[in-house]
Length: 87
Image (tube, rainbow, N blue to C red):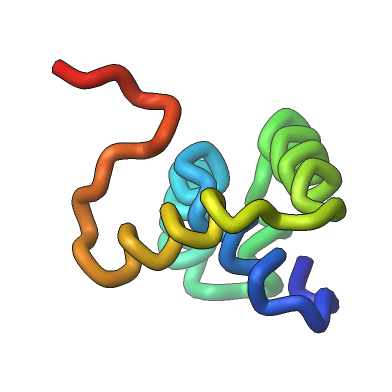
């Protein structure tokens, strides 16, 4: 994903809640290890598989609705994900 020249694709990938959770864990492990190597060196095989699937999913065109969700989360923080039910 880092090599992608498409900023919208990167935003769609890095704003995915599962990607965020995985990256938070990976960065925590990397920090605990003294920042040796690259953060992805500390991802499990399962986490890498999820990240690869998520990256593949955003290869196509990002919809306007997805971009709107990303922008709302960036601007306001706690905005419900479009697939979350109203409580």
